[in-house]
Image (tube, rainbow, N blue to C red; front, side, top):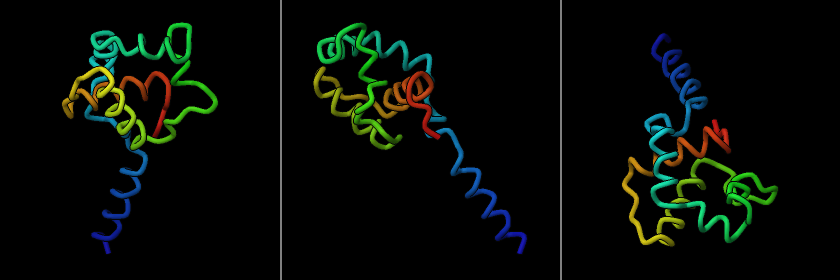
Length: 101
């Protein structure tokens, strides 16, 4: 019985875990600058480009979609992101704009 209670508690805590806990948001912020992500976003959205993250019809509606979108964007800059870069970028974007749980 204790085993099942432990597993239930573990599953419940994982459901509320930060989706990019292994990412470093500060490193992600630096990667946005390094890869000049906002230059492309400015062309699409105007301003400083950040409206791409907050627009009402945004395409990124979950943590999984965020990773997929970053992979598409990395192709636009001709860069293959490492797994850690993806986690760092996602941690930054999630902390700053998305707030996925």
